[in-house]
Length: 344
Image (cartoon, rainbow, N blue to C red):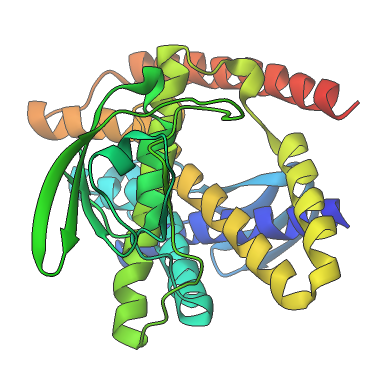
């Protein structure tokens, strides 16, 4: 069941991503040769107007082929015949659509089950928070100067605080804000240093406008989570062995299904929505990074073209993207191998 659900999730996320490219291409009157779901040999294809819509053999990935690599094609309707700003809008549309999908799903979840407000429900003795006077009912408004809207924001700040560095906490009580310095401690039985505060036991419900607002805060949390994971990867706190690819995600989806199905279909849907939000936020952010062969890498060359007033040598750009593609393929093989080893 996990494989089927994972394929459906991946397919939906990839379709939204490629749909962003497709719609902006059409808006800029750019010819789209093929819109495909999956990779590899074509299982099914149908020509509709100028575009062929295809289903490929491998269920992960997709493409919106606009002839962007054919720099010599400057015919009417070709990608390279359009202004640099039009081409930039088409490239950036895919990742942006992924983030929009994440926001829509977050809005649905907040409307459905509410959100975890940054309200302290309990303070544990022996930790710095209690010694600094934080009490149950206090509302955490800032952590290290960063505005806090969800309890998840606090958990993320604490989790990524490597080395147990002191944390500046701003909390509100009876309309008055107080700033204290909390030093996380790892007491017996703790998996990591803790501030010693507990979040709310129940979620806060809100109306439609509140759902739209807290949907933004929720998707922002997942974006921040993605960036923090990247920082930890670059900083060496996590390694390549900790990364997961399609095989690992299938296993995560299956575990989420198996653990939630006994509690009813509602829990299954919520669990899968959480995973979908995480994946689509990751895909959106990763594709905006300046990595050759990805949307962000192409965007860098378009930005340079806009600044210089002329295009970078197509041969040089092609070599950079090819090198980036080769690196990504090697990384994918390593990650997939690690996924299989973990499962076995």
